[in-house]
Image 1 (cartoon, rainbow, N blue to C red):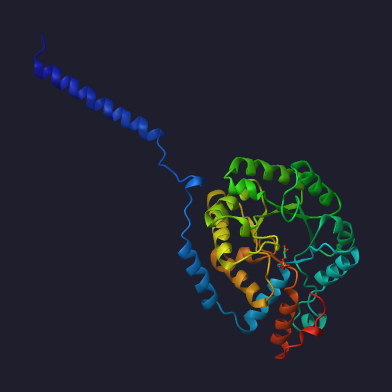
Image 2 (cartoon, rainbow, N blue to C red):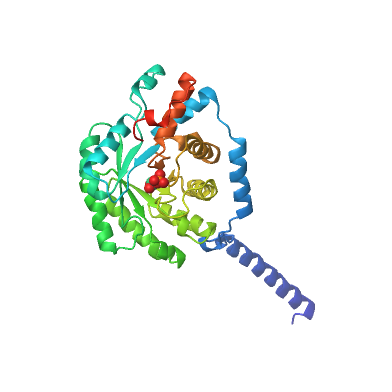
Length: 336
Ligand SMILES: O=C[C@H](O)COP(=O)(O)O
């Protein structure tokens, strides 16, 4: 017969052993809790401070400024999205995209052949633009999915994308369904974007978040992540028709989402601020933000675009000033 002490120590040893085993088993399967998409926090005052200090701190001068202005031209999606667009004015815009800066100015610095990144038009204008841009290397972007409001049914949205691609668009700027973001229906948003991506085929998909219609920066961050997970090649701030368009603040939220996504997955997704970008100084602000937040690789046209309908005229004036020391009056400049 065993006495109490012996039984006690055997039992105690068994308990200790069991605890050790359990610990090993638990540790083998335990993953520390990771924040989910729904737990995203954005420090708004810090974002605003960072954007404001960027404007004050970042001043690009002289030769460096000239080089950055030329890069801004190469990164511009020169755009016309108006109800009265015609094939004729689209052809004129294509001519500008092919030769955005006066040839004599470019020749003076050995930059002949500089073009804009892309021409951006409505799907109905794609055939004319495709013919005008053939063989130039300038990309052709078409807006789709019921631009700018996105209040059209899924099947017509998909048809619109397919039509634009079939007519020669190499990039599709789709508008996301704001109602899904506002309602937090992330899975539905993801599914929709995956369908759009399939319809794009080999064309690049740029997803427009229309940030001016989203309630806060957290929604902007979450929508950016979903858009990237669904296969967007670029995320874009705005259609240019909302009352609030691109800003450095909202761009910071989006480029940080791009950075986080890259760190997690290794995928490089591009960024396109759009709407209300009309001065060379503003364009350089976005370009330098890309450089500081994402690095040199994100300052090239495959990963950075500026969507603008009337930016090139000011950039061209600043380039002329950089080369000659004098400003031309705006009416001497061809259309932008
Ligand atoms: O995607 C580009 C925007 O529609 C252009 O907007 P904007 O006319 O204000 O430059």
